[in-house]
Length: 337
Image: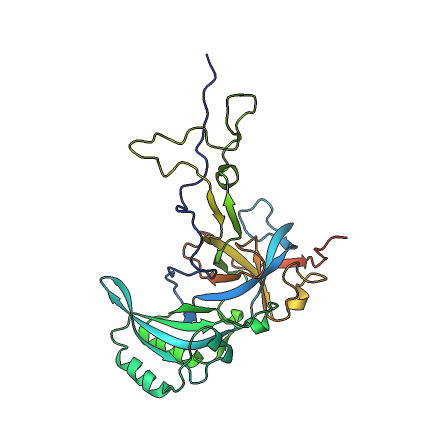
């Protein structure tokens, strides 16, 4: 019997087309249904500072290492407070959600003018009364929030803007909560708690134009065929007629795609970022001085990329009820030597 030909397909078809993201800041396209006791924002934004490792006591009951200390990779996020500068009401239509009205804060952040054109004169009370009249038609309430990069370790001033859905038992309850935080700062600790699972949404590292070997993992062909014209290529790219299949691995853009990683666990949060900053600062980022978030595992994107954290849209079946116990977070220098 001859040897069977084993040729598994190369590269996943789940992420087509592999083109560059339209914006460097990721967009949250869907929101989970969360059963909350009180009104709650469903997302937050932070900047990726770097990675290190931590010694953690395994608290998952079904793990074979339950109760034992384990060394795991963690990501440090620089999480300065968000500034809530607006509220937006949405109505349900046969074609999706439609924006009904918008309410802005009386005093807008000065740096927000670097991103959008701020109104010269604005009557907040008139906008609130107009929104209350449309409250019966609304089905969803979202707040408009902007980041404060001046408070982070980045050398930038222009903020990023994002919409965050307010989860509540009724639209009126969500509206009252949004009105109470309008013009105020929201911390990460107001949205999430330690031990919670979150979805991480960000734009990955850009790697430019790459060939099929690096882009799809195509096997390199043997070099002993003298008639072959190249080795790091696909041997057959399908017939020309009726058409070439889209599923054939081809060279092109690699990286700088928006990706969502599900169920990343928050193991620690705090206000003193110096306690989790490695000696000499994170390579390519610097020092985390303010509030921070420590996530288990890695997240998409390079240092300094804005990462959006959302309540899990498909949470795991079993979630440990206790807060994870951290024995130590390694803060040794990552610069070698």
